[in-house]
Length: 278
Image (cartoon, rainbow, N blue to C red; front, side, top):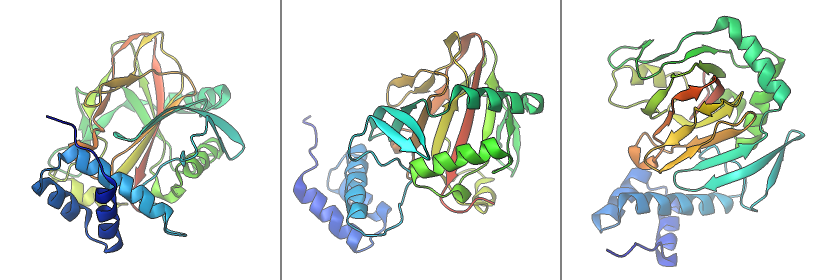
């Protein structure tokens, strides 16, 4: 079967739907009904949305994302230079080098060390969290803006991704010991879970994740994207950003933490919400 091509005519039609404020789900459903593959339809829609937003002066961004339209090798954010190592459209993944300095990585590990407890995941049936065998790490949360280091890093993330600080959760720090892992999962809240309606009241759905590596394990510990078929190496100071415009596996945002084979892995995670997180 030949690959489906996103033609200029399709882009023009999508632009018209966006201008008419037709709901995204309706547009995608219409495309699939006439034969467009779901992944191609979603990619075409996202490309049209990016172009539409560029043409709307002063329009607020619909999704967090770095501005890489000019294909920069280095992005300067609040006086700090980070390098662009990977820029992928679908799934939307950007890998950044030197997002944190060695000193920032060391300071965050030191400040988190004494507050680590066994990591938990959202429960399926109630508004709570629980220890889960799929996630064998220790972790803690900083309050948003809890200290000068958190404030500086959160401001850098907000500037890079053009997403307000108040639309982000507090930074979470995790430590993975040898053998520890996090099985593949999605970061968005599953609409089918009983706990999701209550969670969404605090700021809406999650729409993006920035994962920062606070050290370099000796072996293992990469961030794997099984549906997209690649793995990001855990290099101290580097970061990987990925977004998901709806709570749907078609976003290809399924990801996991590969087992640490030797040494430890430390990471800090920033989750981004649709609205103000309270």
